[in-house]
Length: 295
Length: 217
Picture 1 (cartoon, rainbow over the protein chains, first blue to last red):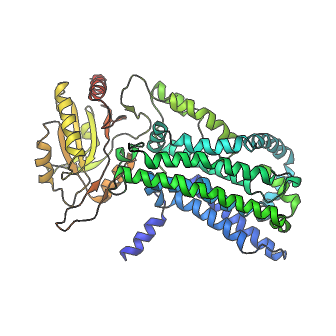
Picture 2 (picture 1 turned 30 degrees about the vertical axis):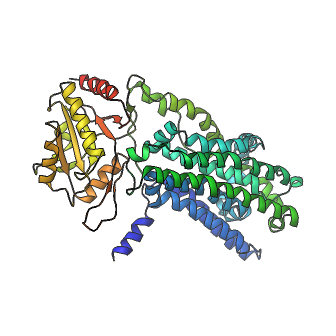
């Protein structure tokens, strides 16, 4: 009985935040509905892509809207794990599933119709967004932003404020997720260069460039003999754990799995390169081209 | 979802203006730029410890004090209150923090009716009211101990974005407790104003407490 309620309370949010819930639920239902529409239309999705999408989305939900969030607020290493999911693994899996076409099919007809009828408004907004999107996805800016954001939130004074203030905490997590989605979208876009995406060589270069700064930061935290982030002693840890042990674990999470994600990304890009991007065959191109910019 | 009180005072207002989350690339981009400036400009430079005006909610609780009386935050309106979470078996942080605070209170000549140190035990299964009373008596008339049921303590620590947890029991039944090492300072109207850290120099804490006591005295 007790273990049941323990599991139940673990699944409940530590701090209910509607934007996270709505974000995850909307994508979940759109994708599920899109899958049904595809199946009815006789189009094949396969197992791998929905799996990647749902695992990625589920992980994002789990680290923000379950009791895990409590650990992430009160243990440094759990916080690093949360950001690993929000900035690396979750967006990686979502981008890998190339979900736009399925999500677009999942939009209810009423929404699609209204979308078409107010085309002028949307076109104006889309043009504005597309400009920003192009800047953020510039092959020089994207990796810089990706690495800078990791460093920025780990500046000790800023980390202190972000963990103390509920508002900054949300801002920090959203910024990690949005940047993660943008970055891995750029890296794992199944389209080739001829189809308007970034060239495979550039992507592998970018994936390589972001590794050393992440290793340097992770190693610096792991080997630091001083407690760099005192917020966890100030606010108390989820359980008694030595400050330096917590910090070392967090450093290793910042260092090794984060850098491994670049390798995995490069392997995916190599696969696109060698097999002529097989994923593109299952995606209607005219859709992907239009959706990509607005996502 | 935790609701934050709107910021009070000129410094706080600048920090909250224009910061709103929206899942669009445009706003995210703008936020990255603004953020550094906003964070840098957030603290009132006149305070030497951490200014938490507008970041934490006002003082609010209902606990049982060391004399067995039910106490509420309202009982301490009109006084500067320092809130600290700990446990009486604490080997280091708690006695050091309480001794330092009591010494500061003595140094600045604060009357116990003017400056209250609220010691909240987060280990109610071991800390009986009489044990808490024996403990706080060591630190002078400013300190009053209190505790409550686990659910009440959880709600209270959560309100101030802190937590606590218990370690494994050793064969003698002793266990360690992780808890916040911070002291939250509330002004006479019960608004959260300052976060005092162990690493803050005593002069800074002294200056800030003097200033807080001078407000509306």
